[in-house]
Image (cartoon, rainbow over all chains, first blue to last red; front, side):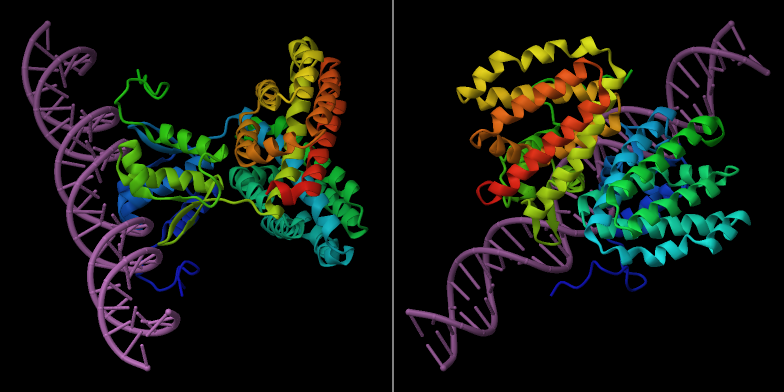
Length: 226
Length: 226
DNA sequence: GCAATCTAAATTGTCGACAAATATTTTGAC
DNA sequence: GTCAAAATATTTGTCGACAATTTAGATTGC
């Protein structure tokens, strides 16, 4: 009977809390609303055409996701990662992404990954050499979705989504660094090869190594990146 | 200058959102509010002496933590774990607790853990043999706090706290099963021994083995437990 | 007696108004 | 002109009221 809640639907219809949340989440993750940016309840309530109460409820949720910080009586600012927090994120991502890859490899038949093996093949390398970092990031996102689907663990998937929201721009800046994208591509080819052979343990090990590499890369260039 | 927010403070003062959240979180985690229990906004607003708007904001947050489920126009019920969700929780806990123990062992000097080695020594075994499961759970909680402190990763700490909220009662029921507490005690003694020797890798391995054991135990007795 | 339908009560969803706190501007003294 | 204090404006925090929806109960018809 209840049929709304799936689509943003008809223009002019008031956005649900979930829809507002989705928009803000995405804007913050992409630094459309950059770190340190102040968010005013009245401005957002006007922008979305809803009352402040709804904005407030959304604030509660995205604060819980560490995307914003609320200072009592002083409002909301978009979270700015400290270097320590960034390292912490890498450490947690390492084990969770590793887990996801292991589970996905265990759950799915090896042929599942064939198209991804091809997606990360020679043409991709050409793209990276020519500086198409957007395309590379795109491929990484697709890979991640396929993996979280295959892992078949909704809790894990939501945790990884949250970590991605917090690190998306950081990773984007890492990928632009000279040689990093090429290195990452090679590593992901190895990871996919292991998955293609059904070797879950090896795939997990390689993914963790990959993230430790990214972490190390971040450590070296953190002044440039944060 | 801002000095509130630390204490619940004077009786009669209105509870902040954070305080209400804390109370509800704890009640749900302990099954004081059992799974499937319906939460009415008006009842809670009266109970805490605040308006429904605040309760609503709290709902947004604890929904984000998967402690409740909101059904549009029909209200809020305390989440009831499905077996699949419970297994998912074990899988995520395994890698995160393993990570926490590895980091804690790496960060802190080995002597740090001496008092815990003693806490899980002979007297504890006597307690478990005599059926003092409360005491054992208490010791586990202390160990967990010491580890999350030592790991020095606030993100990881908050993730583990959330997982604990979702599995506390489940673990309590596991511990009561014949032999499980004794087995867990032995395993934790081994873990602590590795930590006491500064062997982070081994401590992580043992902790993960420990959680896999708990998972397997849950698998066998899940009909009894959920 | 039972099912379907209608009515009333309870509950959730939304909003605008007011109070409290903070930020900004104006004013005035030196 | 500069600084401090007061006045004003903006922003957050809180609440109770009203609308929409669902639930429970009463009524009717078979």
